[in-house]
Image 1 (tube, rainbow, N blue to C red):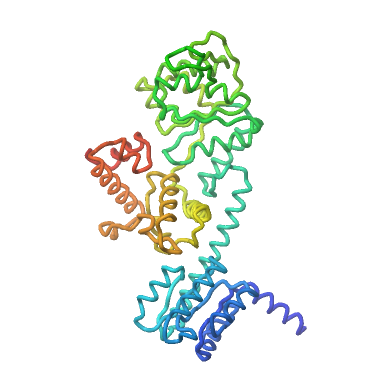
Image 2 (image 1 turned 120 degrees about the vertical axis):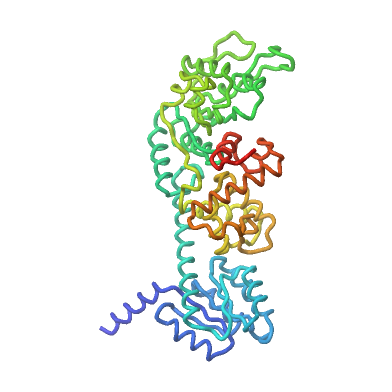
Length: 463
């Protein structure tokens, strides 16, 4: 009976988060050990070396660290060295720094170096319990996020991360269309990952061994686009010194991805329609019909139905391309996916740059979740990449991401109001910076020109 009770207690203890109290004051260690024994598996150490030895043997989730450790009990040098070593050993560990009364400068420096939070002496156990609970909850979320990332990476959706209902719908449609050869039209705002969806369709299809050939129809001048798409024969125009195969021909046996299909001229729309109907092409300057066997996936951030009404897009081509439509949801509508993606991007760019950046501060997480992300995942990617390059912190803060909240938005009552206000302000500032140049402003904001026009109209912004 006693053995069974002992096993039960050990099992219960193993489910508790682990807390290491690092302090040279034995009395304070005992006090904190007594105060936390019901909620944590508590360890203790009197100095940096003892703490490091213990961490090599035990999985520690939380640490309370007194900065005044021997051999520098009246200073902070040993404490800062301990903080650096702890986080080097386990970057996900949550360290709560204990500082002398009114020693706020060192407390803030500790936060910049990667500490999770701080508390001043004399320690209020009730306040410390709240901080520890938050830290334990965040550590648990980070573990779940890592497991989620591992699971997502194994799902063969070609780097697409997400579990929100809107993304589950996208994944389900990808699975269904991948096994057939039907044409797919992917719609969504600029930066939502439409090409990743197209690649996922290709990699799950029977054409996965063939080439995935992408072309941005809006990025190539119209005079060159026909040659890029269909190729040309030697001597067909000035500068055509060699025969060249086009993108359609290069996609033989694979998938052709036509990005920004709405930017295609009417003349080229007619030629593309013929390819889809007859499954053959003629190179520019050529007279021989060349059979093509390529699956076509197209994408656009335009409203093609409106474009058809205006006569800018052919209705017959629309229905050829639009056998199945997949809508790529904007980042602001993807809920918890935002932080999962942000953490994945941070880990990737920190590893590439060989920077010891362990995560985001609480303020940065709140700023990321509050921001409207008009440029979607592409904007998030750019901000994190820039922050990793320029930051001096081990945890990114709002200013690293250029997401400091303007004072005039602090009193907004709802999340939507705050997002709309920030989005409007950012567009207005960028238009002012570019003297109203839509093209330049769109590049800076990381959105397409049609998306920027939509934002200007939605927020009633004067050009």
